[in-house]
Length: 362
Image 1 (tube, helix red, strand yellow):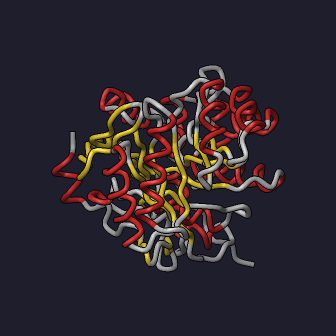
Image 2 (cartoon, rainbow, N blue to C red):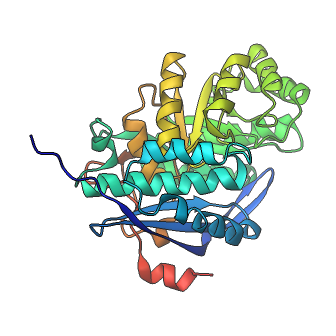
């Protein structure tokens, strides 16, 4: 019996870019005008190069995060290309410092790049490497904190493009403002488009409970992060009182945060951010946990990678689609009739537009 030789990791490279948004994205917590991204390349001994994207949210964290990822190079260089094994080894190495925050982001950057390299080395997409079959995944488009008329206009644009779901940022001064925004969106998109709303953690549990009593009559698919992301008790209180499902998860660090939220019954639906949950390895662990508890799973950002991971997530729900990072990608995710299509993807679907990276480098 012949055995395929194991690839060995030879090099890790990181570049920092700042990608401006075509339209700044308003939220109740502030405005996203650009995406500070650390781009990681892991090269193996046969020349395969795996890629990953780390989103640092603020430019102040970009260079420190890029440097932290670079500092992981000695820990993986000359090691076998075995992402799950290396994830465990690195987690042990950073146990005392902790694997959240910038450390967690750096570890996820390496994990995502290693899985990409492994899939590319085998000449398959990530979903096939993980034993799944590519299938269309329903996607929703994001509506910013754009006021009544602005939110309706953006939502209508998504519906015209064939999207069957939209998610709006709310958290206006009064619940009447929230309701007016939701109703304007409903009028703009029609009765068949799912509407989700996101408070971006801006309410206290008591205020959220009061608003949800009114929003419960609006036919929403979910209300996302009405209070602080790690206030599991607060979210549990809101979820117990509300008829509308509560959605949380994009700000959880790793599956232990998710486990605590499940134990608290903090959220009806859960949303995984592939970077914060621990890369591909962390996502698969989280998907198994969600399956065991019959919890629907949606994604946060990273649409190319998340669409493939949702294909192997038993309780897959919605893909959050954002085109923020498209300028630096050679082939952005294909969307047809509001569905993400990954049939023709290679690796994790992340490959660079080098001319754009050169122009946006910092």
